[in-house]
Image (cartoon, rainbow, N blue to C red; front, side, top):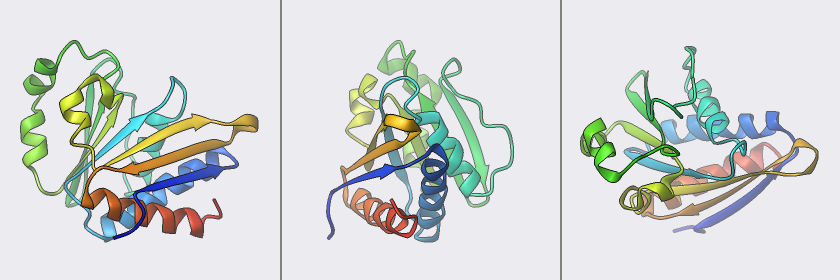
Length: 168
């Protein structure tokens, strides 16, 4: 079925965003949905940058703000929609339910990208793949991916292929 973990060390932020965009294109081509992606890492590690690059990879050309204060932003990319959650300021699991979490999880052609998934343990358990992001010396980035489901294993396989293609 494939390896359940992957670590990619990227030499620059450009390589990081290129990988995120290529990953999104590969996931879309594979019709890997519904998909929940957890994004973990310190402040400034690139969680929003990763989601922004994924959206660009899908051809989204609009503004992509950080959802830190709004908790969520939604995007339509043709037949696929993406909900970007930032749970840093989440006040409780009920807040997610009030925003429509149950509906998002039920839709087939949807990705949910969750920054700080550990702040909502029930949602963290639903992550198909979790990415741990870190800034390395000289502006490089480290991406450690772990699968939580069968779809997550497929996603990591696609990420591995894109990382190899991009020289990570």
